[in-house]
Length: 627
Image (cartoon, rainbow, N blue to C red; front, side, top):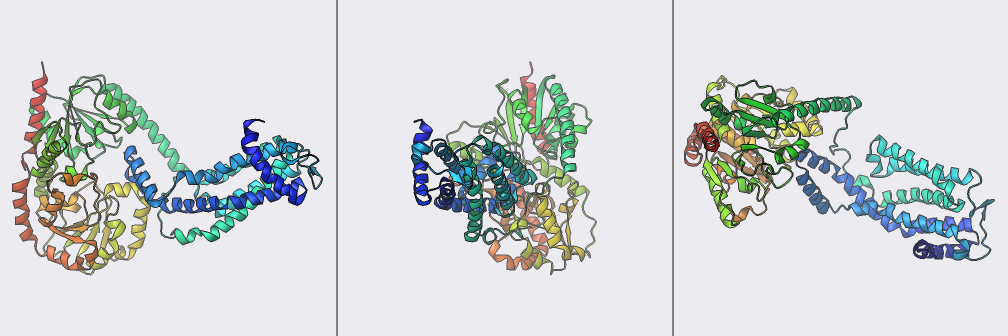
């Protein structure tokens, strides 16, 4: 007796023998056996049904995570695991019905192939004139198996909570493959196996119906209001392939050029628009030295790639290509806004060990609160923008016994740029015009748009103000379905001119011409208030805290302290006061101007002179390394 007969055949042979003792006919034994197996496995079917409902319920959340962390696969995996744990979804439970069928089929085949061993002598194998032990001699049983397979697939695609969510191939492609497999399978096994296959499919339909009654998906899933990731059309897919081909050709040419030249300074940009964090330093370097700046961007649509400037070279490299590009980096200095260097897939160079990696934050906020633990550990130099930033890093080094980094108190270069532009391009809005309120949410989970936009709009739309909703650019790009629902939900306010939804981010004039900004945790609020000296209304939505150990550092994050200096922060449960507070802030602009100016002079480094401090540091370092 081989191991298969020993493990599977003996057990299922025993069950089949019980069924045979009742019917005295092997065909009817198979029918009863298939029903009995479905009854025994019914709890597993219920578990799978409940698990499937959870998956469909959280599918929008998974789409949300995939959109938010598309460029951070390691973080995406962590977030997905956390979501599965929170919602009690199990990938193993999803596979259970399939996994348990395998030993059953093996057992049935073993019993049919060895009837004497399992059922005894003189077994009645005639079932309506068909020998259940013989190989198929006609199309009757195989046809039943194929028809039952098609019927089960059609019903599953229509009523199964998971199957009906699938795309065309997920539904009908799988049905075709399973049907073809069934057609082959039932011709290479005894007829009794084909009969089991048929009745297993038919009872499977009944089980699906009962599971849908016990765990009705409509009771757990809000099909009407959930947002589903839109599917690409055939034309869109073709266009995506065409663009990717162009990107690959550009990347290949740029990387050949990048590695063919000697580089002293490299700036790395994660996306288009990041030039704004570097441009003051780059311009200072070019205007005050003979150093050529090499600018590496991960965005094929970055306008910097078309910039024609002396002592400036730009290159494109895809996210995938950047993994090896970073490992082969050969430059004296690399400047980035990318946190978690050497933690995930972007590593320090293995070609040149003495590169000085400089970190510049792309916002005014707490590095301890908003970056993951250890996010800056592998940088050599940090350009600090304010006192709290410096203090947090030194405190972190002390708490975790880390080697001291080179901290350069530079300031926030983007703020200097914004102030200059604002002073030159101040709004020509007349005093008699309506006050203009800008709602500018972050794109983190549970932002204003997602949890409390309606009560805010309902309240302030009753004031004599114009309202502009400016979603974060990443929100617009990644959540197309949510954006479409905004236009639909607030169509009345849009038609009457009370509300304007703005998605053109080519200019910041909309931001800096506002009389008041309403936001959650977006860094745009700090930039707005420090630039214009006008107040901000902060809505205290759940904050995205990246470092679970942030409280170990005894420095109060500026994200907390600044909120009630440059404006007012309002809890979610007090949104009934949003209209009165909005009006109060609009009437108190002069008071806040003085408070904001005092804060800047006491806390921020080198307002107005960041270019010479940061750019000068880089020039001095490069010159010191030259032979």
